[in-house]
Image (cartoon, rainbow, N blue to C red; front, side, top):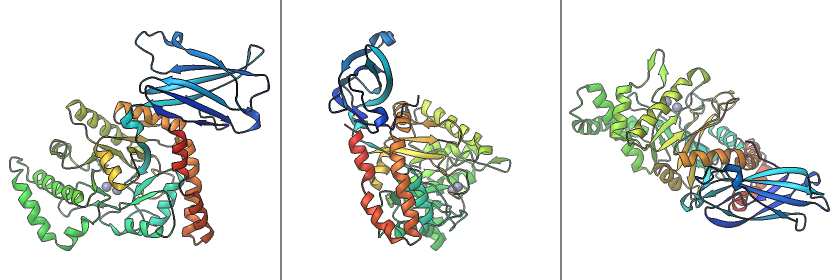
Length: 431
Ligand SMILES: [Zn+2]
Ligand SMILES: [Zn+2]
């Protein structure tokens, strides 16, 4: 399936469905420059053929000649789907070379959004992780993330530390606040992504008021006989409401995480959370090591069961990484959010509106995407055709961010010079 070809500059790659567009193909290096007398046969295969099932018979080809060494292909892109453009170099009516490119046509709602990759559940040395918030943030840019949130256990300040580490330099990664919330009488783990105050600090500073307010919420669940379940559900409801008050996204973490021999949160508790849905988004893909991957399988299966019952939970995929240089978890799981902009509000609203997919890319294994079918299809195209270019730019920026935190002031100027590179790439690739 890999059709990435870095010898050419091809744009646009993402176009509006049911529109006519000109795709430009510029050879970048001598090895792919058109030879003098060659003509080019262009064949267009929309991946999703009409219901006639005639497949290749519907191929549509024409012969073009290069203009100033570049090819311009005008095509009509029908519906929301991937398109293959096969280009054959014809010399004396023989095929001398061939190359193919992919283009994706999108309905307006998705076309008007850009894909942003990020991880909103990670730990630093301020809790049980390894590195500083600044180091982790730079490492995230290095692997192609557009946004992150550091979510240490019971601690909010590490996420502020990450923001402050880069406040004097122009970086294109969105660094947002966060914490993993652990209430005193509740084993359910929750992530506060982006909230503008700490929820942990509320009960750390005044547990009595927290308990009083949770007890009041508990009265509304009096039909639930089991006292522990009732209490936990009330506590979760309280926490998620506080997260929303701060403008954050409340995430239900790793429902099928196994500690020792059993699930950390009982399936009964998980089902109650599904039923009342106090959370905003579900970690459908959580940060599980190779020996724990069954937990993600179960999370996906239970998410799909809920969808079949009509509950379409907003989702995220997170690494829950406890060290970005440990060779495990970091970068394996992440979320692609389709949003208008990289602002916190846009990201939160887009996840809530189900414009996100949870990605699994365990090292050495095949990449999986979870979520709405149309988003999964599009995400796979992006992983193959667009993100490799995006990630190349991010890698250099991440390396410079590491140099910057080590005290290299030249890195600051270089980062400023590179500011906007990813947006410029996207402006070129989107029609
Ligand atoms: Zn946790
Ligand atoms: Zn965690």
